[in-house]
Image 1 (cartoon, rainbow, N blue to C red):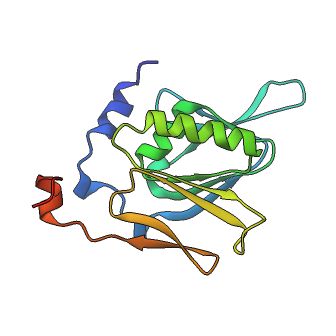
Image 2 (image 1 turned 90 degrees about the vertical axis):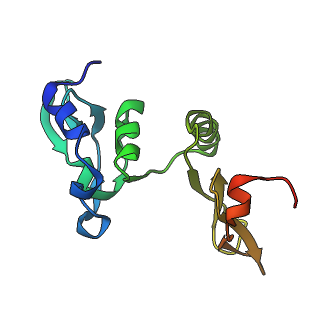
Amino acid sequence: MAYSPKALQYASIGAAEQVRLTDRVSYLYLEYAQIVQGRTGVLALQADESGNTRGEVQIPVGSIAVVMLGPGTSITAAAAASLAAAGAVVMFNVLKRVAESLWVKAVDAAADGVVVMVTSAPQTEQGFRVQLHQARGKDVIDFDGISLMRSIPINAHDEKDSSPP
């Protein structure tokens, strides 16, 4: 799908002019909607009982921190990619098998990017499990049954040469 000239103009906005995280809307919660990538951005569509679109809302992806998808909501890969590129976090509830499949696809599509997935794990003290992929400088450690995120110092030496001195 080709983007409209207006959408391409927004893509060229410099980092200094973009919306800062502190200025973003905290979250957007959607139910019974289809989230799609349109020509000018991400849209939330609602259909009536016969399947006809009855409502369409443009989602301001650059100014939302978290998008929570409730029951009856679906999202296209293109819309999810736009949200991720804008720095928004997408949260949803899926079956374990679907989550495993999403993890594999996200890692394959990540290239040099970071992937973080938090999934339900009722057998743990916290009730969830954190998975990281290419999270340079971060690690998940177990501290008496509690998962904690650890920052790992990155040396300038590590950046230039990974061999031992």
